Image (cartoon, rainbow, N blue to C red; front, side):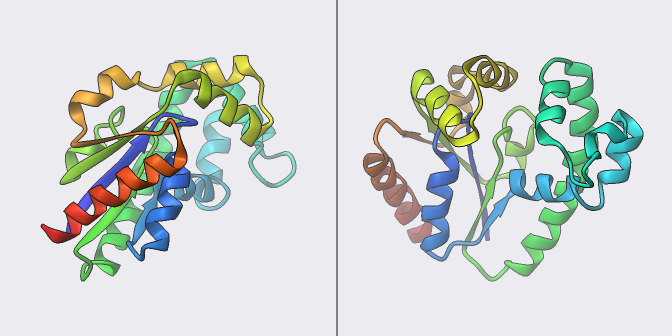
Length: 192
């Protein structure tokens, strides 16, 4: 079984392409989604101890308050990552065991390179998109504003730093072309 990393900056279209992969029957581990679920369950106590109960005033994590905190304070972001990443890693280990009979599995993570997780992947697919497209997609998707989106983008590595580390690069200027590029990559991976 090969572990294929799938990454791309916020708004690159990575999640849309991940859905396409899932529709093709390839098991996909969504690190970002798992992390969010863990923050509302088993990691809730750790987050409250580290940052305060005000993040859970309604019983569920207020993601906007958390984003405001961590994207304005790199120390808080590092503390949050040290809580979330090991827990996500443990869930991924179980996923690998469950899916061991598959020729490939996908490990999706927005910060695959930033965290060094890419080193545990056999190959990595990077999804890139023009900055302005990314900003507009996130504003549309999250109802966010330009400044908030840019703060999040700045916390991630620039694509120029990621490109040399990727085995495959998808240029997501138009979704249909990006899907075609992905289909070609998946065909290569499943043949070899």
